[in-house]
Length: 112
Length: 115
Image (tube, rainbow over all chains, first blue to last red; front, side):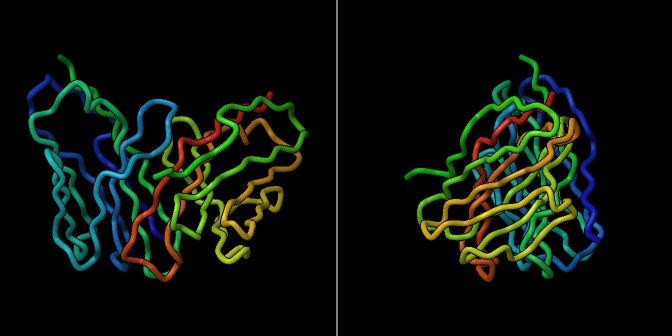
């Protein structure tokens, strides 16, 4: 059974800092990994999708890496802004089955 | 380009009642999945529908059932509501299940409160 863990559970940083969010998964037989952002009480916004054959994806100030063999992914946010404050979720899609397995999320607060 | 649309946005029900939640997938998507997200936790997979059939199911009791219509929209039904069913219910759409290169698009969710 796939298990996804996100560390840290919560993070508070001053504006302008570069930061790294971590995601680990127990079963390396995945199709892809997706990072999402969730604002309080809202739905999920897809940030980046990394296929199992890829090492990283970039979108603006965001960069996500994937090391499938070690079961790890990181989301790097450059020059953080107060508007980046949200919960960040990673989810993996296994080779077996079409569902996403989510981590518990990292709650990020960027202070002005 | 309309994304995933869910209704209603909020709902309050009494324990023991039944509820129906609705979802319209993103244009071009024909696969719909439902997730339950308890407060402070990551979403949990309920089930997925494709070609009007339930294709995969997570670890949820039979009180949770669904349906997909010919226009790809979907409903989630929950019977005999329990207090523990209070959660944010998220609908996600995607291309066919074998389209594994593609990600999921999520709606804004329905907040269900059971009192």
